[in-house]
Image (cartoon, rainbow, N blue to C red; front, side, top):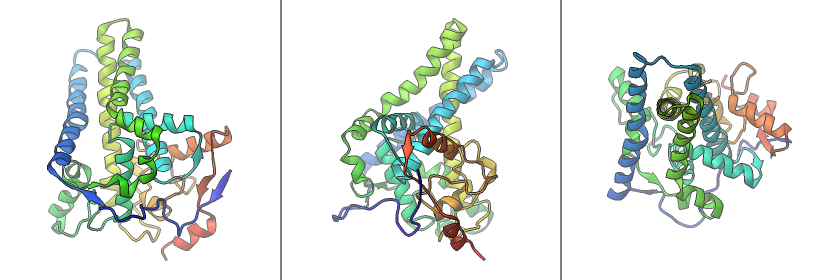
Length: 321
């Protein structure tokens, strides 16, 4: 059943013991750079190769299907799993569903479960203030068009290799203690490889050729990773810079309609930053939210429950005059 959410309650409780909020050292910086090269740069190169090959080999319905199918699976893992469930506890579900959502989220290649949650919770704690890992609105940036462009670049790409790592023992202690999630977390690379193998094998079987396998890898693997990656990163950049601001969220988050579909509804950022632990991010009928549509279906099937939603009274109270 759906339950009204408490808008005065944080979507997570930091550890009570005194722990450093962030970790910054050369080893962490090296891991960030390695992750960026493997899971941001390589998919970009793979996407350019896939596009170049279109000159000789037009894309078929198989590649389109693999791209959309793998995009949908990994976006479900990112938005329903890592974001709304693990980071904000917007609903409850079974152990089996938790495992599925965690693995699909890891396939998105934007960080292991625990790290992703820690970064996101810190983002909410310091949204658009010093300490926010990926705000495009930091005070140290210059004013004017150059400052805006620098801010967008930082929020979309620059922060990936240049941010203090949020301490998981402070920001996600319950996940660190969870043996199942910790095991999935340790096997992060395995899930990324699985996400590449699935379209590769399917492409090879459907086409009945090695070339079909390569096409499956390119379109269902690398192009899909590129699309998912930039869709999620656009929330950090564009949805904190452009769009409407109907609610008093105490930051510069925006509702941005242009990337609502590719982000599964995540781009309604002003809604989200106002009602952090709401399972629904699109709060009006016309605000497309594919993530909540899936949660609604899962709730009707009895696979998730205690789905948190803001009441009409809560929404009205937060509207700006």
